Length: 144
Ligand SMILES: [Zn+2]
Image (cartoon, rainbow, N blue to C red; front, side, top):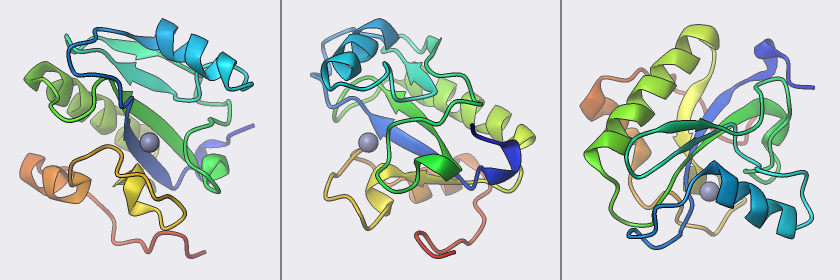
């Protein structure tokens, strides 16, 4: 069970599927079931057209960031390298909404965690946040 006060990170991911493949939460769900997981590991999925789809509810621990699932929420942009303006607008909306509810949480990219060798989400989340005026608290990742 994820308690609101446990949420320290809002983690941005990408699906690493081809940019021209308009999949959504349903396909991610199938893929993650295939991994032997309990379905879609993210809490939100953002489709190529900017639609925000539901993954896991926020009280359910996700499966998206090794070693930090018990203290984070995950949002996944569909695509790999080039995300649409609609997606980035929806990402900002989603993160602002989460920040209102989880003010202690900071926004990070999956690749910002030292435990992963992935480059996900393939852009600099911190730089993007400052461009958009999204608040980031100066936390040190991985340190408690
Ligand atoms: Zn990721």
